[in-house]
Length: 325
Image 1: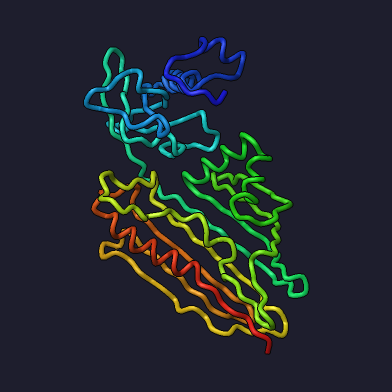
Image 2 (image 1 turned 30 degrees about the vertical axis):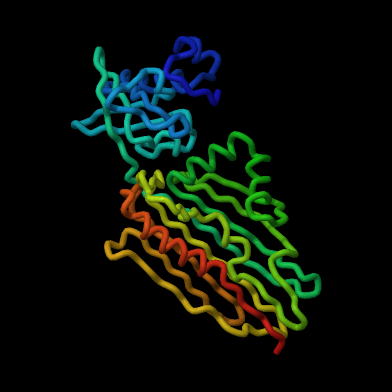
């Protein structure tokens, strides 16, 4: 019923009739099923991200707001959250990854540290055409999400499909229609849609000026903190984000100059970025890709992120000109 909580709102018997319940109802039922199957399963009480970090030195029951399920096999813990349809073993929604929890085993509670070792991926692909006569760019956007990104995207879609679809127009500032979304059997989530916009290019005389990434140059994190960083940098998940745009050059036009490729990475290969643009058979192809190898970093990494994200911003905001032959 979209409600959190560490206390059940009803008995398990009642919930099997109502088929609805809060986080405690749902995951305690899962724990009961695991135990019936002969597994060592127990509740793990956590504080979700929105609720704040749990003070593990002096934990307070009032600071806990969610229950997930843990199964212990050969001294290894496996975590589950049945409140999220697309969640899997050790592949939990973003809200759950908040470092610490209290594991309840019979008559004792034990603090448990858990971290997300998965790699999430987001792929954004645009195939576009330039309508010179109407000064408009039209095309197809495909957004594919893997791992934690897919879990949270599908939860949003499943909760309110209309709101999920409308968010594309709001986030990207283009007209969107015919949105089709699907959940693959492996848990990947993909949305595909048609888009159009008259705001993605400027016509100056016989010249067309545009950003080859179109509207995909937005949505990056900002590392512009001026004061000294005091806390770690937490992405919740290691990730790869790739943006690819293919634009058909209209008849009678050619590309004036192409921006230079860019490639940079830290010495330890934890953070890397590449930007490449080329012209292939009168089709402009640009790919921007960033890889972050870990879910979180000590505060000392902040200058590296600040430097690389400045390069990302500069690269993704470059424009090109199309001129008449």
